[in-house]
Length: 250
Image 1 (cartoon, helix red, strand yellow):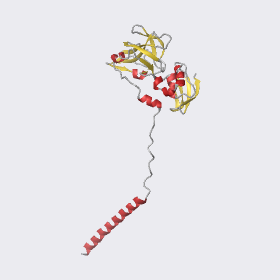
Image 2: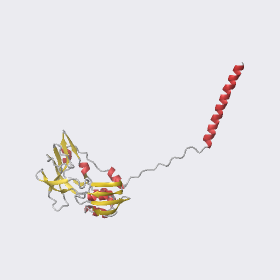
Image 3: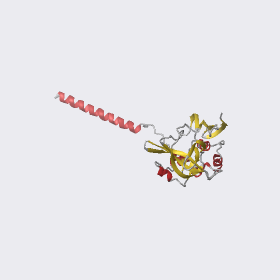
Image 4: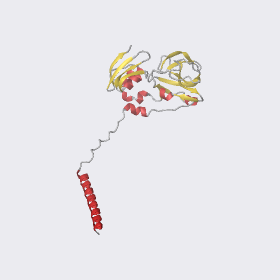
């Protein structure tokens, strides 16, 4: 009997202790300050340039037929300073004698698309692999001194049974002067002359001088960049994404 009382007393003591601990935890929970408040969520706001880049029109071509659908359309160069172009005579590009390099925002009108076996030289395959044959667009330059002259530029290649076509990466399908109208007419006047002035952003300088460039440390908007500029290098220092120093590079 005594043992039974001891067990009952022991169980009762444990229950009382558990209730006391529970009451203490509830009291503490109600009176403590609790965990520190999390910082408010910061919403990222995209820039006007990013908004354009996210919505750029793409064709996703993968055949000669797709490229021929561009006949008669106007395109504008996105990959400025990268693509050599050649005289086109009866759908034959004169790879041995490049006419020049397509410049940023340069306007062209597509006349045809064709294929040609490319020479395996470093210059002819610097941007577009030779493959078994290259895909080329024939075009005119309506704002040049000879708007009727026809040229050709490689835009892809055919190899091991399939095409790799980079028209989407080389050209804008819509006028960049309209796409980036927030740059303003004064800035566009400089870009169309392929010159850089103080205050330009990295994107504006790249549209003007081309995409062949070298970064010299720093972070986007706060760094030095040397642009090849079709063999006439220019170095620019950017601070807060504004050109603060522009110098010819040797």
